[in-house]
Amino acid sequence: MANTPNQPQGTRDKASTTATSVADKARETASGVVDKAKETATAVADRAREAVSTVSDRAGEMARDTTSAVGGGLKSAADSVREYGPSGGMLGSATGTVADTLRSSGEYIEEKGFSGMADDLTNLIRRNPIPALLLGIGIGFLLARSTRS
Image 1 (cartoon, rainbow, N blue to C red):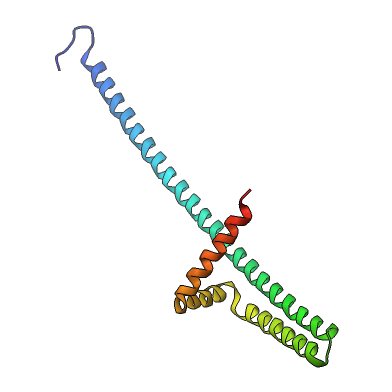
Image 2 (image 1 turned 120 degrees about the vertical axis):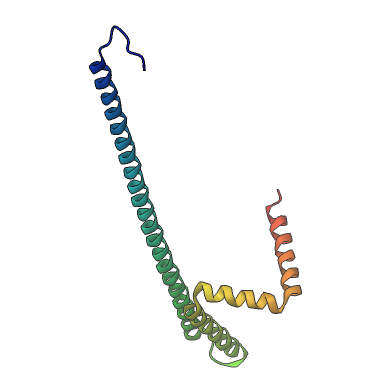
């Protein structure tokens, strides 16, 4: 660095020290900003995890409540069919069978829940792939016909 005639040595040294000080402050500020951004990102991620957990818990509760309500409704329907249906003869026998089926369906839904029913359906499809495929094709055909204008 050559000495310029218009600038004394002390002024250049002071300017250099000031520039170094400003650069150090800028680094500290940038480091602080990065640290603050990391803290904020961590806090946001924690809140997102909490929200997902809460939503998941509530969905599980709603699913349990729904299966309980559906199962209870089927059992109630079974009691109504048994109470108001004919009790003797061929119709009485059919009424009893329908009531028993409704009751066992209600108990199955309450016991297994949606995930248990999905597992049972998956196992049924694995044991009977051809009929399941044909049933899927048939349902698709009926849906396509019903939605066609």
